[in-house]
Amino acid sequence: MTRSDEGRRPLSTPPVIAPGSIRIVFPIEPGPIRTIHTGSKVVPTRSYTSGRFDESHPLECQTEFRLARHNEVMPGIRDAVPQPCRIEAVVDGIRRIHIPDGSRLWFDGRRELIDVKRDVCDFRDAGGVMQRLLGSAAAAALGWDYVMITLAALGDQDFNDNVDLVQSHRFTSVTTRQRADAAAAVAKGTLSLGALMNLLCEDRRNGLAAACALMVRHVVAIDLDRPIGPASIVTAAPVAMTRLPSIRL
Image 1 (tube, one colour):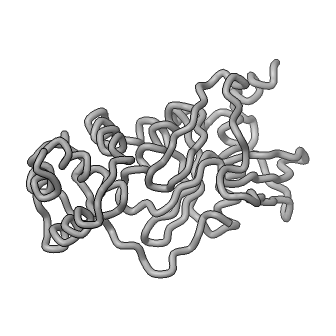
Image 2 (cartoon, rainbow, N blue to C red):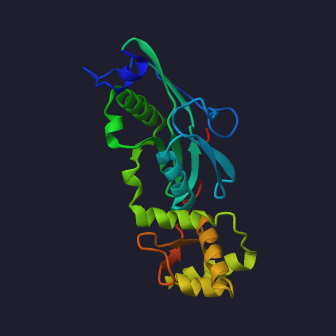
Image 3 (cartoon, rainbow, N blue to C red):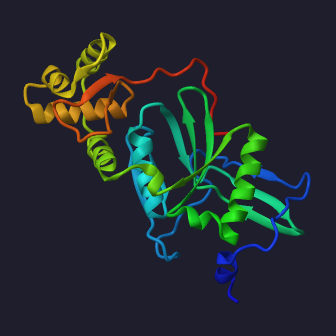
């Protein structure tokens, strides 16, 4: 049996972490704790350059690609870091290491340690169970939430088409006047995307790009549950609680 086969087979008994053996290591420099080398894995690898967080995020699989786009767009997400730490522990007498796929900080102060898989079944094989054990133990030690994310959990095709549209304009420049006008408009209540587009630019195409860029910048929130169009509802983006904690320890 190969090592990869061993990782896929079910566990006969639940693994147990030795008391006091867990260690969580964060990188000294900002960013992920490891660098992905394209070509060294059988999964696709690339980087996603974020406008919201002003950095490049290394990603390994389709679910991570999709999650990065969600983090770029979704209201309420203040910060996100891929591969944020290394978890070390002795499990059933063997030293194990796991690097979670990501972490997130929400505007309400919630901090999440995240593992992603293509399908929920991948969390149930031996490798997935070990990752869940180490990830949840580390999250508990940090006082964070442990979250497992699958491709299906990231929404249907219409929702993801909307996410892709918004994030595609993440580098569109917006003026201080446009930002102020949009903030003032949503402060009065909901309005249509068409009305916001007209407010921002004479050319509606430029108005759409600016509105999407302002969503990435936490100014407005466009309804993503229905196909984006002039009738889409726009509201104010969530406001962060004061003195947010950090996920960059």
